[in-house]
Structures are given as C-alpha cells and as structure tokens.
Length: 259
Image 1 (spheres, one colour):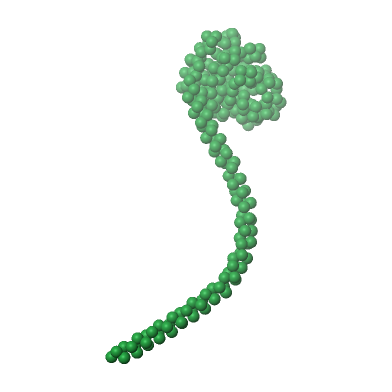
Image 2: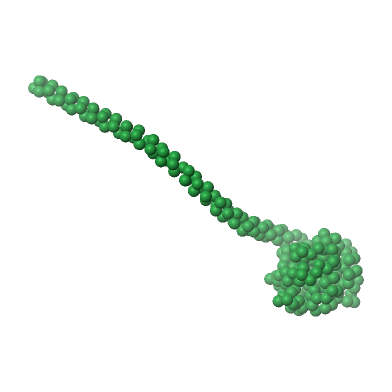
C-alpha cells in the first residue's frame, strides 16, 4: 500500500507541475498580447485628443454667447431687486409734514396716505399757491416757481414719493425728463423731447395731450404721472408755451433744491 500511495503522490505532483507550467505559459502569452496592444491603444487615445480638444474649443463660443445672452436678464433681475429694496426703504421714511416757515402739509400727507390721488393733486396746487402767496389764483408763474422755497418743495415731493412708493413726485418727473434727453435748465428742449416725456408720464396719448380730468388717479398710473394739476390754468397738460415753461421752470428749481 505504501508503494501505491507513493506512486499516486508522484502522479499528483507531476500533474500539478504540468498545470503550473501551462498556467505560466498562458500568463506569459497574455502579458505579451497586452504589451503588444498598449502602443496601439495609446496611439488611438492620442489621436482622439486633438478632435476632442477641437470639439471643446468649438463649443466655447456658443457657450460664451449663451452666458452673455443671460447677463442682461440677470442684470435686470438684480436691478429690479434693487428697485424693490429702494422702494421699501422709501416707505420706511417718516415724512416731514411742516416747514420752518409754518406751512402744514398734514392734509396732503393724509390724502396721499389714503390713496386719494386726485384730492392730493388739488391739495398740492392749493399749498404751492399758498406758499407762493398766490391764494387768489390756482397757478404759479415763472417767478413764483423760481423763488419757491426749497424746503417746502422738498417736503411736498417727499410726501408724494413716499406714499406712492417711488412712483410719483416732482423728483421722479424730473428724472424721467432727463432720461428722455431734456436738461433741467428751464430751456425748452424741442417738440421731440417734450412729446417723448409727456408720452412717458402718460400726459400724451395717441398723438394728443390729455386733459387733467382724464388723468389716471390711481397707483396704477404711469411712472411720474402725478402730480399734474399745478401746471397752469388750462385744461391741457403740457399744451402751450406758458404751461411747458412753468413745468420746465419747476424741473430747474427741483435741480437747484436737489430733488
């Protein structure tokens, strides 16, 4: 039995040795095959790099244009957020309702606060005539506006700006006028600029000036639409050299008073 066992062990050892040699031979051939394939694969990868680089480079202009096209809308969104922040800040300002010269604007403050825009427009005219010492009439001439106290003008404008949340007021109208190409120096800018301005604030529609009674007395009115009544004795806003001149004189005074 011992002799048979020894012969079986030798047979198993011989098989293991031959299997090990076969495995080693296979590993060597596979390694050689992999080593042979590496240069070609490296070359294939290297050959693909230029085309991939060109593809990326060709995409860059379109991506840059896409980013550039988004910038205006993003800028507008930021500007809109800033406007809202400014409006909220304006709403938090406590208004001054009386001037050092003794004129009380409490009634104007109440009318604007309650959204009575038409009555507030009338009250503005009444108060400005009272301040200018022209209680017998309901308009101001050039000299009245030129000499109108800066403090009172700032109070009136501040009340309009605050309660309209930055939509109405002489300072708002002045800035729109400047944006239309006018200069706050009291000189007539020409029909084109003046008509453009009146169109922006809603005083001119379909090529014609509206009357004061046709104004929009609500918070939904165009930016700078109010106040409007004080322009003069005529019905037509901005119509006639005298009425235009008074409004321009007001813009000049607003510039002097830093409105």
